[in-house]
View 1 (cartoon, rainbow, N blue to C red):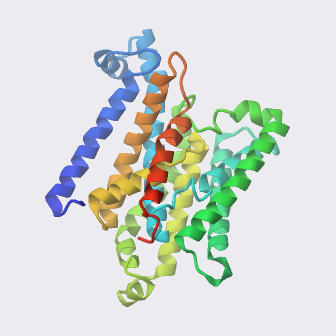
View 2: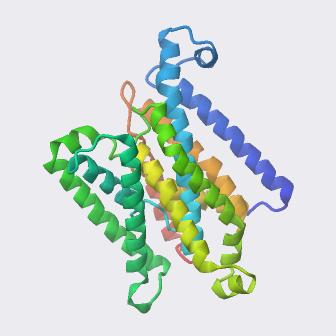
View 3: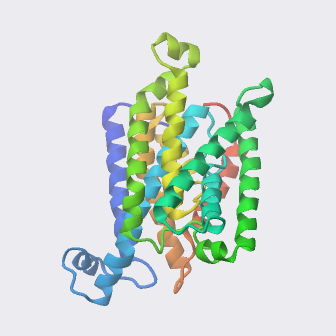
Length: 335
């Protein structure tokens, strides 16, 4: 049952904040080499040049910060997408947005031979935008409207095409394959803080738009006619929401590759906790998503030790059963 009243919701939010703090601590401490929490703190605040200090500050800290940024972006984007489409199965990965962003980046690398992280961000944003528009047009075509089932089917089709073209480029252009074969799976590893700073403006802009849309989304949930009677502008709300989704998904995918099911599982759980108030759904999603993503990243490191499993593989393994459960329980209806 959803929590009710102000205090319980704030309590749940506090629990999520504490869970995020625990996920951050685990991300800094666990991996191929376990580092005691005391040495983690020393490595962060009093680096001494030791091996553990270098691992914490040079490898795990950037990875953890990237996980927080990407997780928050994907969770918020998933909540927005589900609210705008009134479809609990709407998710950047399932609707092809992540694959479109990935395809654009791979084309820039393999065909244009560009090797610049900022260009990747712009390419990912463009790919995400084109794919989002294409999926909506396909889902709304034929005069039947963009129903949940039609949007999912359109997303699956576009996702398959984008994934196929991406795989073809990887095979035909060795440079693209060698440079991004792990990135395509989705991973938080191997990135520095410079990548975070490059995507941060896009993610902050997307998050700001999402926060501004929280109250209008509650109005839109009543239906377009009711929203207009209350002074809302459904077309503007959807356009702003689409822009926020593109900014969030494009930036996150450019940095970490396509990570699936985060945007599906997290808003579903947030809605179970918060009810129908999108202000709380967005808030819960923004904290719960990085907890799930960092947890998956840590689990991949532990299961693959002394190497690691890519984060995208772990999130897919965890998210696919949830997707099947939602469909089998008949939850794939309009919100």
